[in-house]
Length: 367
Ligand code: ADP
Ligand code: MG
Image (cartoon, rainbow, N blue to C red; front, side, top):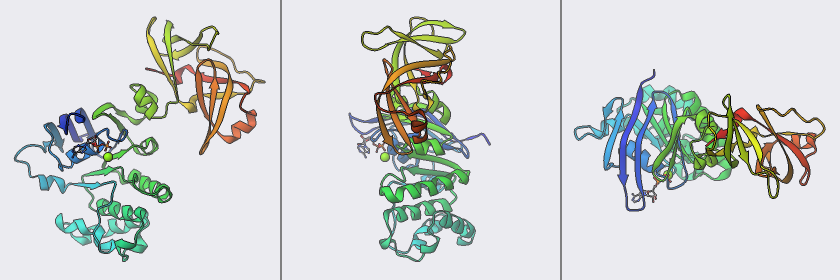
């Protein structure tokens, strides 16, 4: 099914002179996952509250299954019953885990027998099957959030809204909850809007990504496109582009642009080849993802061509960043590469050493 379950047009909400939300166009196709990413204060929660009819916009249209749900005659309660929301802070009652999980059913007139299978499935997947009799009081933050996730999921809502469900969980329980939750949601197969400020969650989960900044959607596109072809520098940085280089297009031949960039203090300018239609005299910014920078040992130099850029540079620093090491190379411009410990040993990389870095002309994005 390719229909849109949600479609927003010209939605505006002004709180004060400092912040206003303005979303021209955004939609979610049925049974897809839209991830909204953006920094704190960009308006993500405001958008979720508007979608969930917890707040009234100043103007605009939100269509849900084809019906404008902001209309005067719309039964807001009936609409809200088709959605389920999970917030940053779990909203639970001071009873047992089980009572909390089934809390939403009677309000929605869903018979318990109908949810038995789902209840079993989600409590098991969220690893709370064994604590159904426990009191909410004695649960950790992570366990509480597992309960509110199960409560939302057993309702089988037409639209599931999740507003940074992992943001307020302590670091230790967050990792395990993240992997359990992402697995559940990926298998779920229903319409989801998932808000996060963590690009890795978006990377794992999303079909589509909307990037919010200062109350606006700066890019709305399939996940791959946002990561590979960010629309501006803000988004590029947000989705993990580490190297941004300013340059000038000096030639274009068969859709390969030659971009002149700095060669460093007192050195000649150098050329970077980029697959692009950009024409001569255009000032551009080149965006390079750290995992696209390949490092070579000097003994086996690869062949330079218009398809493969090669730069020599001195390693400024090597830093630990979890699974990878972040290497900063001075190639006249600052180039960042992520490599494994294994590659560091194989190539004998060390601060101060000169190496060759390769970047395919097709993996550089031009802003
Ligand atoms: P995010 O979820 O992306 O962190 P929010 O939607 O919570 O952002 O907030 C966006 C902006 O709107 C912030 O500047 C916040 O202070 C402001 N804001 C949110 N809710 C209200 C409100 N009820 N009244 C006034 N300002 C608000
Ligand atoms: Mg928020």
